Image (cartoon, rainbow, N blue to C red; front, side, top):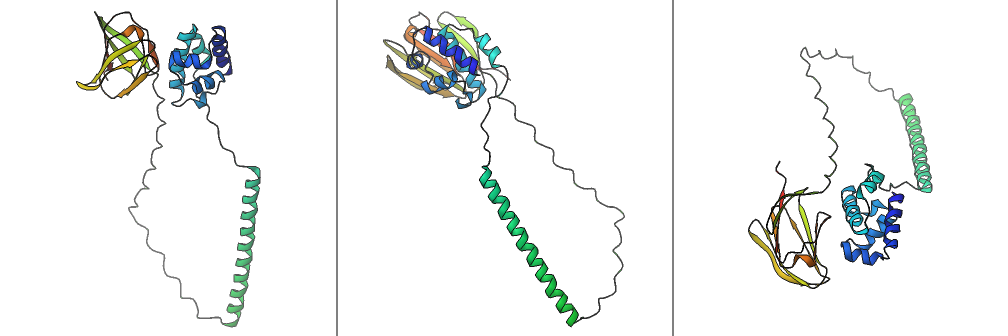
Length: 257
């Protein structure tokens, strides 16, 4: 983990970029970039799926080979810090437990002594004769089956973005997994865009340089850009390349089950 962070930091410094510069180019928060460079992947919300997505975006911006970083990453889950009880607290708990045990034994001994004194002074009535034990059930019912242990949850799927068709100024992508998260960032100048989901318009506006907008959808999402060459698009952490057309339509679909 630390080796990956050193590679990222070295590549950024060789390009003369600060963490803030890299944030402006990739739209990844500066705090997360610093955590990745320190190898502290546990600080990245969303687990290993988002770690891989951020590493892919940083590799493209810094000119690194994402496959090599993925080999260094391996399939090890991000370690979560475990809380350990303080030794002093544990000793105090053991001491309290021992005190209560001693008090319980003393109380039982006192009750036993009182019972012996009462029995010697008043023998009481004779115990009744023992009755016959109940008859055994000839058809005993089997014990209920033990509940099955729940299966462990499946790990989250790695985000994928696949170009399935292209016609003129229209591109259609398949996205995994859902829900879809789309981030629109205006690098320079300004750009008009319109976002719709299942024929319902979510936005139709113009943003100037340095501004961004994000959308989350559980269904098909359509985006129309008026000036795509000044826009950076990120879908589920995966960055799309900028294109020179004046108008560009994007359609993002889920993978059929």
